[in-house]
Structure formats: C-alpha cells, structure tokens
Amino acid sequence: MHNKKGILSFVFFTTIFLVSSSIFAAGGVSVDILFDKSFYFPNDTMNLKILNVPKGSKKIDIVVSKGIEKMYKSSKENNQSEPIDTISISVPSDIGGYGLDVFIDGKLLLSRGFLVLSSWIQSPRYGFLTDFDKSRINVDTNLDYLVQYHINSLQYYDWMYDYGYLVSEQDIYKDAWSRQKTISNTVLKELISKGHERNIYSMAYVPIYGVERNLGLKHPDWLLYQKNGDSYVPLDFYQKILITNTYKTSGWTQFLIDQCNKTLQFGFDGIHLDQYGYPKDFASMYLDNGQYKPYITSKGFIEFIDELKEKTKAPVLFNYVNNWPSEIQSQAKTDAIYIEPWESCNTYDDMAKMVNNAKEDSGKDVIIAAYIKYTYEHTIALTDAVILVNGGRRLELGEYKTLLSGFYFPADVGIPSEEFLKRLRNYYDFEARYKDFFDASEKDLQLIGSSLSLIPRKGAVYYNIKGNSKYVFINLINFSGVTTTLWRMETRKPELVMNLDITIPLANVRNVYFASADNQLAFSKLSFSKTEEGIRIKIPQIEYWSSVLIEVE
Image (cartoon, rainbow, N blue to C red; front, side, top):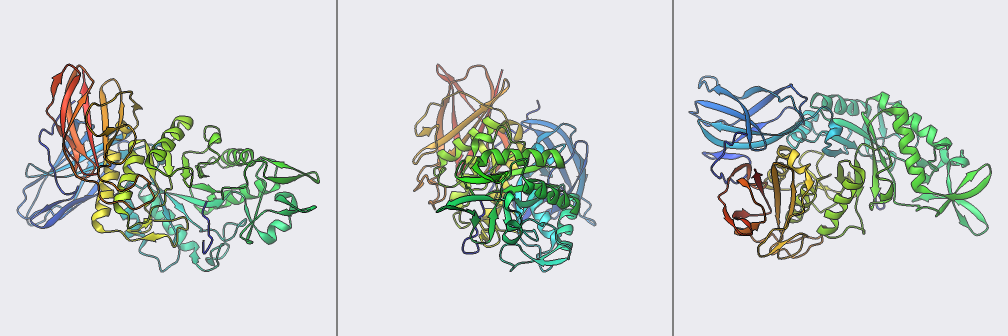
C-alpha cells in the first residue's frame, strides 16, 4: 500500500580472521573485489574487478567454496608493470550459494558471497527505482552498485503514464499520481536493457484496482461501490482514483491485463501488483447485471492474479498490505510473497513469525517491505538480521546509495553512512554465500546457556536453528542492551557479547565452525569440548549477528 497522502568436504580455514568489514585495508588502501552480475547462470564466466591490490604483491588466489568445502582455486601472477585489475573465473554448474575468498601472497584479505541460479525467481533479491528522468544518476553506476548486493530484480515505482493506460505513446510525460515527476521512456528502456546485462530484471508497478476517475466513470460496471444514504457511490482513493472489481469476469480485469501485456511488450519482465489495504471482504458492492451485490475482495485478488499469470506467463508479485489477505498466499499464483507490514507486525518477534508463517504456508520466497528511518542504523541491522535468518529478505536498496525509509518511495529515502552500506553488503554477501544453509528446515533444538532466547527480546541473544542430516546451522542475534524490541523504533547499539558460553545438545559432532555477518564471512574452526549434555563452545563475539555451523557424523 503506497499511501500517497501528503504526496503520499575440504576444510580450508583454520584461523579466525576478524576484520572490520569484508573489505580489508592494506596500508590504508581498501582491497576490494566487484562482481559483474547480480547472480550467475550455471557454467557461466564471472568477470571480477579487483581494486587496490597492494604494491609489491606477487600473486592473487581466488578460492570458490560451497559451505565449508573448497571447490576450486584460480590464480594469477601480479606483473608489477601491469598490475592485476581484473580476473575471470568459471562459475559452478550447480545452483546455490557460494563463497569467494581472495588471498594475496597467501593472506586472506577479502571474503564475499555469490549466487548461481537458473532464474532470478528461484531466489529473488528485490530492490526499487523511482527516478526515470533523463537527469537521473548514471544508469551504469547505479546498476553496478546494486550488483554488489546481489539485487536481481527491481520494482519500478510510479513509472506509468496513468491509472489504467499504463504505457505512454510519448517519450516524455509526467507521473500518474502528482503529475510532478518527469518520466522518459528512453530512460526506462535503458534501465531495463542495462539491467539485463547484469542479470537484473524489471518489474512494472501496477495498482491492481485503481483506475483514473474519468475513465472509471465511463465504465460503471468496472467499479466498486459503497452505500451513501439510499444510493450507491463509487469507492475512491483520495478523490483521484476509483477502486475496481477484479473478478475474472470484470471488464476492468480484461482491460488491465491487456495493458499489462503492453507493458511487457514495452520491455518490462514482470508485473508488481499493489493494493491499498481496503476494502475488506464484504465491505463494498459490485454491479452484476444491474444489481449491487456484496464484493469479496480477496476472491477478486486471486482471480486477477491467476488470470494475469495465465495470460502473460510472466513473473507476478502482489503486495500483501499489513499481511492481508494472508489466507490467499498459498493459493494465488505469484512468484514470491511480498508483504508490507503495518500495525499487525510491531515487534522483532512479530516479524520473525510473519516471515516464517508466510514461507511455511506458501512454500515461496518472502520479501518484506518494512519501512525504517534510514538513520536508525542499529535498528536496520537487527531487523535485517531477523528477517534473513528466518529465510526472508527486505526491500531497502534501490537508487544509488540510498535506503528506503517510508511508503512513498520517491520522497522517503535517505543516504546512510558508507560504513553502514559496507555492513549491509556483508549481510547480503553472507546470506548469498550460505543460501543453502538458510534454506534448510527449522530444527527443534534448544541451546543451554545464560541470556539465550528462542524469541527476540531485550537483554538476550536470540537464536535460530536450521539443519539437515549433515549440518546444524545456528544464527545468533544480539539484543543485549537494546532499548526497544519494536523494529520501527530507534535503539542504541547492542552491547558487544564476548566469549558466550553455550552448550548444544548434540552427539556425534565432527567439527564446529564460527563466522559473523558483521566481520568474518568465512567459517573458521572453533574448539569444543564434549559434556554429558552435548558439546560446549565459546562464541568469540557477537556484535549484531554471528553464526555457528556444526558438522555432524
């Protein structure tokens, strides 16, 4: 609901490397490596850009891993007369998450993660765009930036010519809502085309049931109505847009699907459907052969979504505003679940349960449009961690180096610190690198130790456990010293937890490993001792989010 009111098995790491971020500073110069695609197709070629290789370096090794297993290594000698700035390596043949570690003269200087997919909808990483003017920031710069966070799909917010007639026949036009923003079809096509070069796919934002007033009044059978005294009046949205009937048999449904097909012919890859959170079921009326009958909004949503999917064969997303109507998530033929939480989801615990329930009910990836003020960096770090460890992802990145803060995307953005953007890149790398562990099933296991909690709460370390027959994956999120468990509110930074003593009720443990999304993306061996209750370990540190991987016999 974009309410526009007011503009509206080869273990190769044995030492813990704790660095300040995934980018290692050597002699005051940051060594970095940049991907050329948001994800890679199996057996593709990955062209990496290497920045700031230290002077005098002789050899660079790129090691590709899956989990804790080394797969292969690519090496390149550094010719001092022509220092290395690019390196190409082959991509694995199996889909999933992979690690990429950079060794310079035998020292691990950088760890990242990447994805191998056969399609972006196998594992959507969703972002947004709002600026389609010719004066916008350089398209290549913006998309190259998003690639580093593995953003493989973008919602084009308020790109359309009108509510109803979506594609403009002219190159330059004003946005449908306020008629203030200038939009260029040339810029739209450039964003779409250059996105494809980077395996980034473009979703056209389309209100599912909003029609421009004059067009709607010409088709009374398209509209929804509410009773006003003895008469029925069209249901509207801020005196600008009329709300329509989206049943399969509705003339509006057939009209808008035709417009969506024209949108796909224009170049977009799929459709992102929005709603406004009302009217609820049986709260409005529709016209059926001249008679007003109670309208079931959720039924209309399903029928439109399924008809659109059938007629276009394209990716479709739908906004579950305030997680409503969640009961259709398992039925509607969308390619992922996109939720915009409001009053039904207030605490970190609410967030964890909402993500888990949506994944379990639908069997699909879950994207959360959770709006947090961009300056609340501690809150964002904790919220992102809670969403990620529960198998979801958050919509927050899009226009160059900005963070989404509110529901009206063009205005509700801000520029965070560079340090925080590096932290977010670590989080996105970490989740991509260990995608297969994050995708594992929840494991019914309780840890033993002080200040541990199975729900996010103040003064505790929240833990989440997943696993399979080979591994147990434990994620630990630090709520020690926070001032609130409301995810929209600003909190102070968690108090650093050091050497946390934990007993894990597991037998037949082969190895234990430690990593941190904050500062150590590669797993390293962790010592453990056996007790009558299982194994005992000490977690070196938890700033915001650290992880333990246990290899079992």
